[in-house]
Length: 217
Image (cartoon, rainbow, N blue to C red; front, side, top):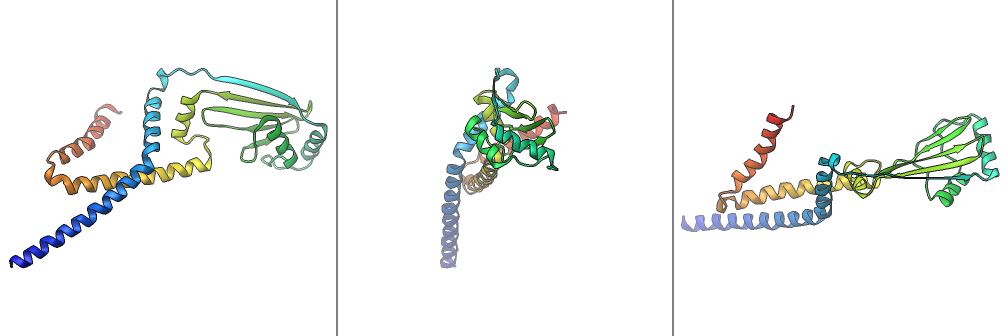
């Protein structure tokens, strides 16, 4: 009987060691992946919570350039035909915009009319737009910059940050979930020798719940 008990105890210790090893491995890997994201989202969580107290002075810059006559003629021909209201700009016009204003309209919404082409160019931390006057041939680009705090806040919200940043947020959220779950399991495995574990976990659950029930209406 003593031998059987010793064998069972040895197997239990082996299982515990196995899970501790793998949980620690997943915990530190997810922590490493989440490090920059946790710092960024923690800081921007604070700045968003106090957005009204953090002043910002937007800087607006406007630049107007005459469109080359050949490009102007191409656009006027397109407008004279049956072009969809959301059609992209011709490649030659797109290349000219990149060379002149350092902007791209390929993923931007474009509004066509007989008098004007309007391109909305939203961006994190500001805004921008481009207008091409089909009568005068003038292309006007306006850029609004609200500062780096606004830029980081918009990254926190995923506002106008593009599909690559959206993918990063998804990966970060998944890694953070692994970090939290493995941390909880490690707490469980060490809780026998740390009596304050579950009261601390319970406090972390009850506090936001009470705040929501009592002070949020």
